[in-house]
Amino acid sequence: MPIISAPHELLESDIYADLQPLLGHCLCMKCEGFNFGGSVKLRVAVFMVAAAERDGLLGPDSILLESSSGNLGIALSVVAASKGLRFTCVTDPRCNRATVRLMRALGTEVVVVGEPHPEGGFLRERLDRVRGMCAADDRLVWLNQYVNEANWMAHYEITAAEISKQFPDLDVLFVGAGTCGTITGCARYFRENGAPVRIIGVDAVGSVIFGGRPAPRLIPGLGASVPPPLFDSSLLDDMIRVCETDTVRMCRLLSSHGYLVGGSTGTVVSGAISWLDRHDPNQRLRSVAIAPDLGERYVDTIYDDPWVIDNFGPDVLRPARPNVHMR
Ligand code: PMP
Image 1 (tube, rainbow, N blue to C red):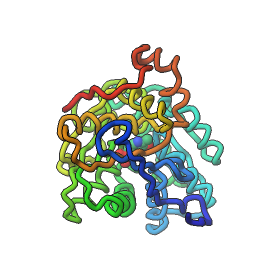
Image 2 (cartoon, protein in one colour):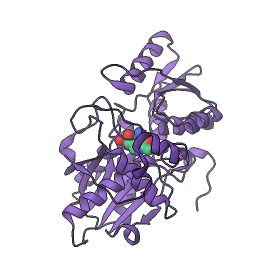
Image 3 (cartoon, rainbow, N blue to C red):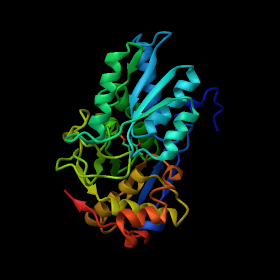
Image 4 (cartoon, rainbow, N blue to C red):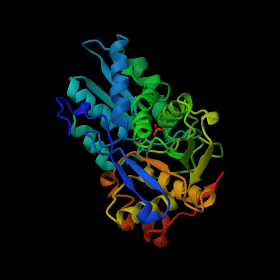
């Protein structure tokens, strides 16, 4: 095990859970929640702050600013605390309560927007707020994960390289879509290295990333209410949309076996199993699904029976294999 001298140095994660005994298909879950940011976003936070430092954007009075549904906010809180920088995070009411408290515990100022924008939802509302704050205070440095090249570069240089090293004969990679940094970085890596890996994007029903109309969603992490600039459908071999009931069912199936995973992991694994059921009935393909975080931050939602019953009905309490809506 490595010895680190700052919390943001724990950037690598070579931990995979083989889900074949549970789900039948040859599917390994790449577990990204075992670092001090608790998610895959620690990599992105480190790369974006390093790029800002390299570009000379950070002076002695600078305050980092970012819009995040949670995980990047926590990751940037870790990096900022570790480097002695100030950080303000703009989030929305879908952000888990625990996530807001974690950011505050790390010294971050958290701004929670109130109502969603009538057309662009909470994401548009958050971005409008960030723009307004930047116009009013020139100490603020907006890292802007939606357009920052360091976002996808972090996954190109680390996430994808790790997968390729561990699985030289990989057939299929399942990746969730939010800002699309993970999809872009991984797809570019495998394309440029000539590896015949099929890249399958997974998103939530109600998100607009793969097209379609926006609809309310309750689970943070995946999806977007406005199209993310990094998204490029030509990088993908297929796209799957999963409804939140299937996400919750898969999370609860995995947790019933001790894998307490985050919401987007339930979405990606549910989508992966459905895709493999259709395309690999003989279970020959070797596949990996990226699991962006763990489930502790979802104990008041996905893993809370009354919350599930209120929002999805009692049937969804029962863990189950997916029933996915293909594009
Ligand atoms: N899952 C979770 C839990 C996340 O926090 C994120 C990032 N918002 C994603 C998936 C999507 O990753 P990306 O932004 O790279 O598309």
